[in-house]
Image (tube, rainbow, N blue to C red; front, side):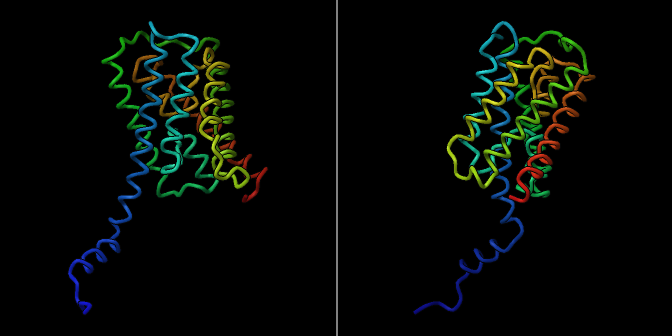
Length: 233
């Protein structure tokens, strides 16, 4: 005979209806964003700091982003980039409630990655922008636009839903940008990477604004362009 009163069922029901029950699934997304951003920034530090810096560094960085997206994209969307999170929010595929925690997870991951790098590398003095601030700002804007544009089209568009190539497309966009303008701006295209680079001593704090303005600006324009081209999709 069925029991009319079940303490266990009552307890489970009370937990599921409590606001904290909705917090734990969200924490999984934030943890995935932390992990992916950590390994991206850590790979940047390991491959661009001498003596190991070389022509294959952009390939390693793009590949690290690609595999992390394939690993965690189904959980968090695989942003691993505060500028990409902004673009996805403006596109309407990320809630305002999640945006700030995503940013916290991503920037925290960059800080931890930069801290870990000190055990692997000896960093040198900050390297100035090769051909000036204006060129660096434009380079960061253009390829962050390209990155956000690719993310929105391959990972959020109805026309490419459930595709199996999105991680490769996004990772190779970063690789392409790093090869194209890495010598101009450093090729961050990501405010979290920029923070990590500054903390590693590869860029000065005075140049951080170039990355923040270029990256967030490029992502915002990409989102607006996507909505103009695709409408509400």
